[in-house]
Length: 141
Image (cartoon, rainbow, N blue to C red; front, side):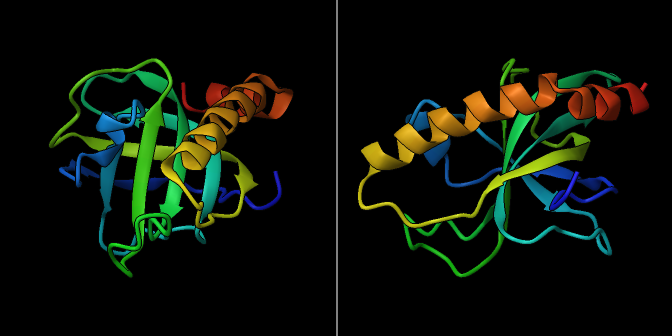
């Protein structure tokens, strides 16, 4: 699908600022492996594959600088797992992208960010259930 990388982003789950959990959207922060391509900043739909357990989870992925909080110029990769797999710290994972949902943006308030995040998850679910989303998932087995 356009605007979604065809190769996975591989990396290790590390501690982040903890902001997502406090907002009701706990995220797994991924430190990409050296040499792993990171897609352009955006919100994506995709699959998180846990190498240790072999399980695959529905995900909404944010690649960007957290512009609403303006706390760093660094690019972060954060993953919200729809089916909440629990603590992933230290795990090596692969992110398989299905589609780009939208550009990252700075919101005027946390409430606006939360409204957008809920819509992102809704759109991500629809994309994961699409023929293309199911095809990407099937290729992981």
